[in-house]
Image 1 (spheres, rainbow, N blue to C red):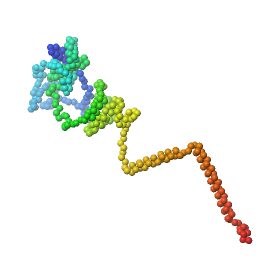
Image 2: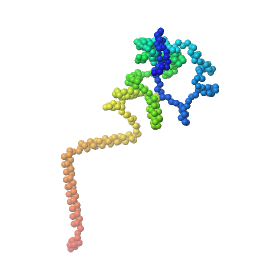
Image 3: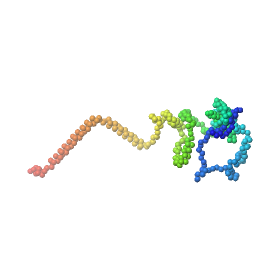
Image 4: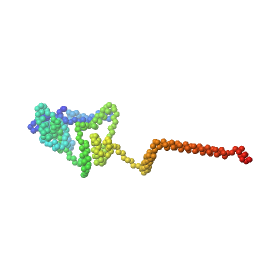
Length: 364
């Protein structure tokens, strides 16, 4: 890693030559400004307000603008003559417990590397002293033209330094807290504790920037000429007034489900597989529909009762055969009687009609 500053740590009368190396890097994706009409890149040029001519870097200096707009030129020679004991030194001023440093003060982070073989022994001495004391060192140093405050601590086998803001650079949180008195119930605190326990701890190395990955995929798709489909945005419920208890309970259940834990008897869980069942609201119906629902229910009951009675009154297979033969015999008798009646009526009708010869005999 490339060093950005060379100097020494002043530990009492002990001087430790070191190199300052950036401990962090920025992975943000940067965009250029372009002209929408033709795609040409937009560039910023430094132009003097008086003659409206472009000025190059070698012709640009520093100045302090006074309250009335007057520019007071300040040269690098002027700054170099100022007494700055920490110009090339990280001067340790105190050792304090780590919890005395407000995280709001923390700024950029650096690694301090021993510069050369002679620096190895005093560097290791300071590192081990910090480890055994469980304290951090507060120091002053100068970087990029100004004096700064720093905190030295041990990370693995390396001394790291966090740039700190000066105490007067931290703003007081006035007007930030919610207005009025807000009461939190014990039940709500218990659910919040349960949610915290359910979420548990996380491996910090497993966290990554999902948005940056999505932007990289978008750029790759556009570069290859593919059609980019808009992502579905979920409803986060921002700005809505919610039931805090219900939200906490749902959050606990969701956290348990995401971690593969079984529920604790919440509504909607199946008895066998522990999955959440879909619950649909019952729609209200009018009086007619409810009455028809009742009549249909009664009809269903009657039909089911009729089926039961039929199944009970149905005889066994042997009895059914006997009943069938009896029925056939009765039908045969009925058919015989009907035929006899027809024959009788037929013969009676023939006798009623007398021939002419029989009429003559009767008259004689």
